[in-house]
Amino acid sequence: MSEIALEIKDLHVYYGSIHALKGISLVVPKGQIVTLIGANGAGKTTTLSAVAGLVRVQKGKVIFEGQDITNKPPHLVNRLGIALVPEGRRIFPNLTVYENLLMGAYNRKDKDGIKEDLEWIFQLFPRLKERLKQLGGTLSGGEQQMLAISRALMSRPRLLMMDEPSLGLAPILVSEVFEVIQKINREGTTILLIEQNALGALKVAHYGYVLETGTIVLEGPAQELLNNELVKKAYLGIA
Amino acid sequence: MTFFLQNFFNGIMLGGLYALIAVGYSMVYGILRLINFAHGDVMMMGVYFAYYSAVVFSLNPILSFTVAVLGAAALGFLIDRVAYKPLRKAPRISALITAIGVSFFLENLAVVIFGAIPKSFLDVFKDKSILEKTITVADARIPLLTFLVIIVTFAMFSVLFFVVYKTKIGMAMRAIAADIPTTSLMGVNVDNVIGFTFALGSALAAAGGIMWAMRFPNVHPYMGFVPGLKAFIAAVFGGIGSISGAVLGGILLGMIEIFLAAYFPSVMGYRDAFAFIILITVLLVKPSGLLGKKAIEKV
Ligand SMILES: Nc1ncnc2c1ncn2[C@@H]1O[C@H](COP(=O)(O)OP(=O)(O)O)[C@@H](O)[C@H]1O
Ligand SMILES: [Mg+2]
Image 1 (tube, rainbow over the protein chains, first blue to last red):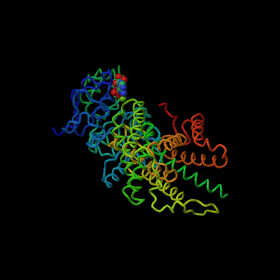
Image 2: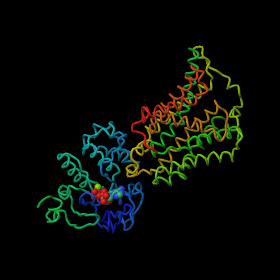
Image 3: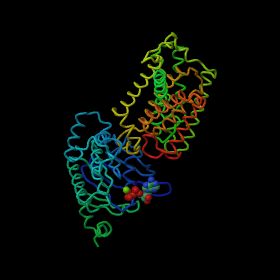
Image 4: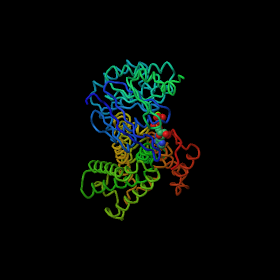
């Protein structure tokens, strides 16, 4: 099954006595954008954290390109080709913008490739180029989000996971972020996108899953979900 | 003027040594929010490594120094691996208590291996005439050794700042100080970088300790206590967690001690108390220290 990038099978995660993920399963096919939508507290961040190795999986499996990566430590997951744009951006405030980008490329030795990718990122986000020497903590929210996405791209991931990249951004920036997500995908990167902004996410995604309190309650091609009555009512605000 | 210059050089030397030791406290605190009580004892072990390399194994001074500094680095790395790493996710107080345990362990280990009877570090100098040599600066006669210590100290600071601000692992150290989970998401093996930080801090402390022993040659298993405590105060004074703060705090503390003792000889007997007065004042007036950013957390 070489066309599957990521497969999650019957995943369970607990925080102490809180059962945050109650056996979720999903598939991210290679080359696609798959989105996981759901309300606050549904378990979206926990799902990405479990794949990335940041929280312990109690039961179930995470399979990346056919390899079982369940409970691998985060730095090894990253080296296999998975990058995460974390919730809240998590820019290193005390490092310069340039250093933040280099952190993304930490395990790469191909100097020329890193240079090429930097050029590509400056095309995607020209603003970052002007701010290279500034400390990460001095950027605006929108700039930090661009930096967080760029930093993740610097590892040249085959799977890019993004946790609510549009959160807290001005409306113009929100559409810019969704455009960039499509651009990155067209260049060949598989994307698992988490959003509370269901409309924006479903518009760019190929396939979607709906998560409610730790359980997947609905799935389908993004176009179908956009027209689904439950989704319309609960997530798109259309009565 | 002569008197001032003599004290000035003494102050820079003593302060530089405090600073060398203080950096290790500050780096570890910056990353793990851990006060590594064993730091002064790692320094003590470094001094013994140097003593044995030079006196027992008759290595030349530069080689002895190198062996001791590398040995202390390895020891610091090992202490983190064995004692602190298993406690990374435990409550902070567990690591703190463990640090006190490691301190006792090293002191007792030193008694067992090296013996409790003090040794004189002056034994490492085959040619004792070097101790008498002086350089004259505007009428003030400054011991050659003082100059050497100051030069080596500042060379080590240059290496430190180069590593922290110009190398990849230094960048990872700074990233970890801000955000450990996110650093691990970048593919960085965080435990290795933390281990490296311990090694670097321990190497600097050993270098500082060896030079301290040239000045105060009494080598014994508890010799890490006073310089360790002073360096810790210097780190808090400068802003614990900040490397430049540790350097600044150390140098200022050394200067203040020397100059107060020089110009107010009647209070000489209370010299060690100055450090505590400074500590208490800093904690009251600016708890984050001279260059520190955040308020210090309660431990
Ligand atoms: N570190 C944590 N400790 C305890 N509970 C947590 C922790 N992180 C998340 N939770 C709980 O797990 C559930 C899922 O959270 P999360 O994955 O962050 O949801 P989402 O990203 O969809 O908003 C919530 O009930 C939340 O309160
Ligand atoms: Mg979340």
